Amino acid sequence: MGTDLTWLGETGLDTETGLSYTGGEDKYISALQRFYKNYEKNRARVIEYLEAGDYENYMITVHALKSNAKMIGARDLSTLFETLESAARNNETELIEAQNAVALNAYDDLIQKLAPVSDMGDVRAADEISGEEARQTADKLLAALDDFDDEEAKRLAKILSGYPFRMTQADKLKEAVSFIEDFMYDEAADIIRQIVPTIE
Image (tube, rainbow, N blue to C red; front, side, top):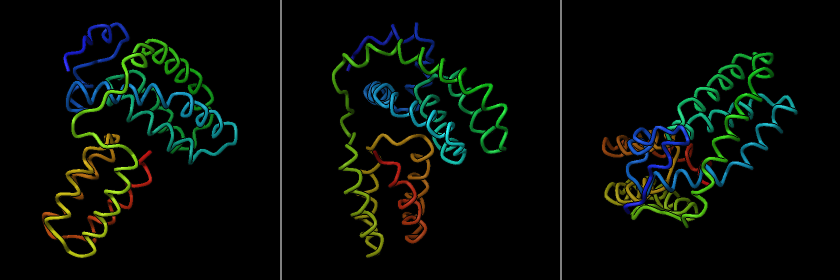
C-alpha cells in the first residue's frame, strides 16, 4: 500500500511489533482503525461494568482491550489493561479502583493521537473479510465439519482466517485448522463455536 506510517512513531506505538502481529501494512492500518472506531463502545463498557460491580464482564472487556492494544504495538497500554484483568480475576477491587482511571486516561491519550487513522478511508487487506462474511463462513465451516468434508473445511478455514480476529481468537483458529488436518472434526467445531461470538 505504501502509506507513510512514520507519524505513528510519535504516538508511542511499537509499529514493528504491530506489523508483525497483524501480518502487514494494510492489516495493521485496518487494526488501528478498528481500535479507534471501537473506542467509545469499549470505554463505556469498562465504566458500565465497573460501576455495576460486574467483574466477570469487566475482566472480559479489559482482556480484549489488552489483546487489541498489544496487537497494534501499544505495549504500555496493554500492560495497564493486563493489570486490571489480573485484578478482576483475583477480585482485587482496590487495585481496580486505583488503576482503572490510569488505564482509561492512557487509552484516551492514545485515541487522540490516533485520530488521523479515521481520515485514511477504510483500509482492508486483500484477503480480509467482513464480520457478516465471517459469520456466514463459520456457519458453512461448521456444516462441512459435520459432514466430515476435509477439503471444504480447510478451504473455509482459510477464508475465515481473513477476518481480523484478536490474537487469542486467531490462535484458536490456527488450533482448529490443526485439528482439521488431524481429522479431529468435533474438536475443531468446538473451537469454531467458541470464536464465532467474538465476530463483530
